[in-house]
Image (cartoon, rainbow, N blue to C red; front, side):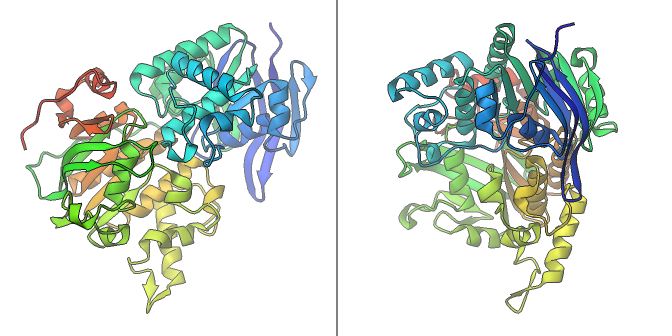
Length: 507
């Protein structure tokens, strides 16, 4: 048998009383694509940080090409030939794409820009080399991370949720690229919660649960339900059916909205119209960077329209175009942004304090002062209901895994019992069990009469959740398509601009 490229023996890592990794043995073969599976908080991210030199193990040994390896930093790892794309990005927002790449990859800007463009075309990861990162959507930023990592020409490439922001047409193209990299001598550690993708592209799968390895299998020998059962230790719940309903009252209406942001790199919106009624879930599909972020900012109140042009956005029948985010929330609006750290939560603050950010009007204040007991009880209930894996309500938000932080933010907003809930990327980076629970909760709320708007780049999610789907492309929104009468391939064509219009459904 061929000797492993990377070999871990007895690796353990703890943070206080939390045992993130316990006695991990792992071999990554040369020329292989090796999946790491596990629920949020199972220890996947910690293990990858140990391999990449971000953290050092408390116990155990690491061998690289048969020789002992001790990494003091990610720079050490890159020099050895190990590259990583993190789930939470590590880009400088005030720099351009090519300037961020240049921090890691030496070379002239013009040459690097050409390399970025070529890799973007080859991998389906197009991005403007001279755009400032702060103007990019979450999906575009992930593209930059992947390209930057590939430009270091790693021998071991660690990818954390690489397909979460890609349209269906680009996923297979990326997989073809990963197979070419593997066949060319690169090994890949692949973290994904999309079990069908793991079965399609990976040679081996190591399963983590509670910081320990519980299985090592060939994923092609198991279906997605088997892998999910190994990962979460139980059978997946069946999707909740929709409850038939007639059209409820309009909770959100956008009429002929045109908007050109001040940022020259942002997408302009043109003649955008949509309606979300009580008892309905409307989904917005699209490739990242086509105006989703700009539309979300206008709906949430982060961006307000000039008062003379405000009559374009209505919530609960009221013109809200010129109202700020707090005023919209007072009408019964709640919002889960796609960017968890910084917009959905403050990483340095405890979960209790993060609860107060949006839930303070919901009985958590008394005579203008914080009711600490109620705030803690609210947070504990959110942690319990949404299975947030955390040491306690006083834990810092930044210490949670991405999926657990997402569960907390989604749970916090749902517990406000809004009339209108807007969720951007509801299960991005969330494991299959937690994603199923979040989707079931959204469907249950729709069945109870809540109006829900979902922006997602995962078509499978939109088809599972939504009554109708509209597609955004280059700042224009298609007419709604009834989900049950539409195929994913058709949505995919709208996403790449192959259709200019959609047939209207009855109002």
